[in-house]
Image (cartoon, rainbow, N blue to C red):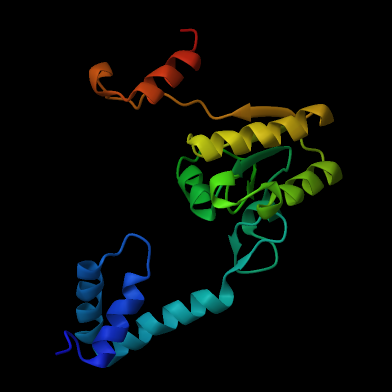
Length: 197
């Protein structure tokens, strides 16, 4: 006996393909869609189709854009470039309202274990931007994991001979953390990145 009739089963399977969505959550999403009015379901489907058709990668930085070039690249100075792994990292930094430079999205990090090398991510685009512009600093804002650190070190080794200042976001303890509960890697990094007060 089938658990779901075919249309529901197909919908559940599609939702289950999304990252972080298990079968129970996929079922809840499917039931929610089925219980929508026709108008709500059409608006939901139109939003998916519209995003798929109209969202592109900026030809300069690789971030999401509706046009050929994103608003950040159009409006800001390119003297400081913040290098991130994915477009969602740009959103996280933009929410801070602290950075007024531009971005460069790698669309991945170097990971030999997964067969991802320097040629598989957007490093060539970064080098092209630096050679053609007035870049003074590149901020490496990749994740503080093994792949993110390896990627930052690799890119840093390419840029330093060009006379570009390369910096790395500081890592360490989150505010409000008790030392006894901090993981060893974060605590060790906090010691390395300590600052004068």
